[in-house]
Image (cartoon, rainbow, N blue to C red; front, top):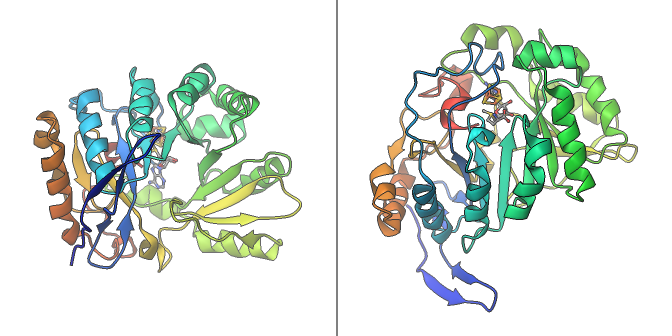
Length: 344
Ligand code: SAM
Ligand code: SF4
């Protein structure tokens, strides 16, 4: 049964903090992490996500700044401490810096993370950090420009890596690089990432390719099991890091001879959903209890009304519908046509 502890609002000298609220599902999992998609548009054509590019004819009625404020306030008052801004490509929104600031200034939010393809990272990172960004994930599916372009349709790898270097030069060290390893494309480049990590104090996270409604054949041809990579790392002397409470879904590994770390996101492993701590809201204001549910839950009318209390009630009411696990092993992908639509 859903348990919501009594809300007590306390004032601290620095900020107003909500205490004692916790979103919890029927299986005892607690949710302190919101993945917030702010657009489903993208300027890349990753062949596992949007191989034909963004469908410009799609509806673009994305949540406004004030709707996002209502949403984030409601989640914060329900115990959310971390917001990850994602998309589509979130950096395509001109008000991204304002969205970061809004999240960072919401009482109760301790971490504001961004997942981006990094196309304008070099230009924008300083602004984003000043606005309150605390964690950055940049996707780079290859460190080789030609392979990168084959997978993403973009020739921007150099700019993206320069953006990461700039973030580091600004003293920012909460950076992760995301890569999906694909049998027919970049799998043979696994060792390139390891070599890069010897001197680079960054975490590279390998995300296991997931099946969606639109990539079934591609999935069969390119899926690489994360457990094989895990065994390879353990054989090479990498050790597993103990998981933090607000951490994402990755299992992390370190090695004395490497400055960087490795994360493995293995959604096909049996216990993956046991540690689920996140909820998702799409750019159109639909709550998704999982990436692979059959439908979203509409929060939009409460958000349009700027009604924080009703938004909270909508979220609370939905929690008992959260399932124990996705059914990806049975090739059930739910409403998820591609990750850009809900927010990866
Ligand atoms: N456009 C941004 C980016 O690429 O970082 C943010 C959105 S993207 C959907 C978020 C992450 O989802 C990226 O790291 C991407 O590689 C990953 N992703 C997209 N489709 C995927 C799939 N079918 N399986 C696994 N990861 C996927
Ligand atoms: Fe765009 Fe990200 Fe999807 Fe690539 S993975 S097509 S960058 S949304």
